[in-house]
Length: 303
Image (cartoon, rainbow, N blue to C red):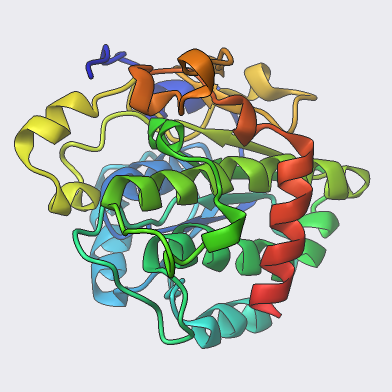
C-alpha cells in the first residue's frame, strides 16, 4: 500500500478564515494532529478547548504557542476528557457553558496489538474512537444548536476501508481479534456518525462531515506501528479541517486531500482496503441504513 503526501497543512486550510467569537473543542489535542488543529483554530481567532486525557500534556500545548501565534489569536484552554471513561465525558458535558461552534473529534487509538476492553466491556478502539465521541457530541448537541451554524468534524482514516461496522460482533467476542479490522471498524463508525448527525441535526443548523486527516507517521497514534507501516500510511495531506468554502452547505460526507472522496469498492464485494485501495470512501461508510443502525446501537450502549 502506498499513497502520495500532499503539502496542504492545517494552517494552509484555515488561512484567510476569521473565527473570532467562535468556540471550538478539539479532542486529543495533547499531541500530533490535534495540536496543529487547535493551534490553527486559535490562529484564526477561535477560542479552542483542548479536550485531553493527559492535562499536563495539554497544558504544555496551551502555553507553548503564546509566542508563536499572532496578536488577536484566540485563547487555548485545557480540560480533561478520557473517551474510555464515561464519567469524564459526562463531566465535560455538564461543565460546558454557552454555544459551541466547532467540535473536532480527533482523539483516537490505532492498531492495538492485543484485544483490550474498556471498564464497561467494550473493545477499546470502538469505544474510544467512536462511542466516546458519540456520547460527547450527543451531550453537546444543545451547545452546538445554540451556535446557529455549528460544524462537527469527525476524524476518520483511510483505515475505514479495512472493515465495515460488524453489528453482530462489535466487541470481537466471537470472531478472532485483528488489530486492523478493529481499527477499520471504528473508523467506519466515525464516518457513519457524520452521516447520522447530518440526517438528525440539520434542522439545528449543525453540519457534520468526516475526513482523512493525512500523515500520522510523526504522531503518538503510530506508537503501535513499525516504520514500514508508518510509511505506507502516508495519505493525502496533513490537514485536520477542510476549507470552509469546500464544505459550505455540505454535510454527511467524507473528505480527503481537501475534497470530497470518491467512492471505492473492492472487487467482487471484497472490503476495499483489503483489496488494494489506498484512497476514497467505501460505500458502506456512507450508507444511510448502516448509519441509522449504528446510531440506535450507540444510543443503547452509551445510555
